[in-house]
Length: 212
Image (cartoon, rainbow, N blue to C red; front, side):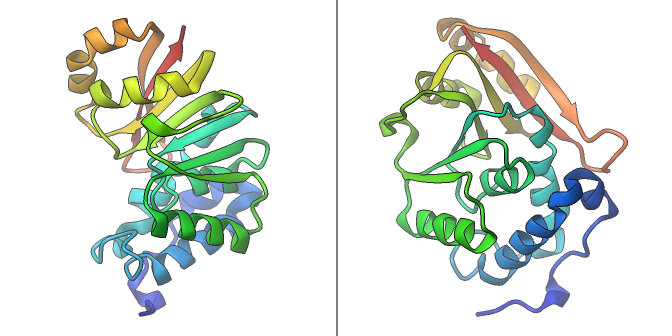
């Protein structure tokens, strides 16, 4: 099954501003995801008309927060945000951690198609992943609540590294519910950032914390 270009959301003007000289790689990824994503069970049929704004730009807004180091994307799925971040930040190494074989197959083949040499795909659940050396940062999008996600990811990140989790509008409620988990896992500098203000209509909220 292939997808007509007419089904894909028109690229918003903000995309070129956000991705700069990496926009062509991101465009190719978006086209590939539109063409194969539903067939491979990576995205639902209703996502194509909002693929840019809801998913690609939402993921790309995180790119300026990345270190030029090892960044793990937990539950990478279709490559949101992992492949988008790898395309936007070739100076960072993205380790895409995903338990489902058909998704890891897609991640590897798509990274090859895009010519991304800064991608490593690891088929594993976060709690079973063996990472060496430890990650400088870990990110995740639409995986689980903070109270569950934090204990899964902290063991993968070095002391002084960061957690960067893309979250929805109720992130403050999640932070409140995870207060004991945050303390138990020795997280510091906990904050919620709103990214994309003045650039996009649908801003992105990010939970950021340092692993102590």
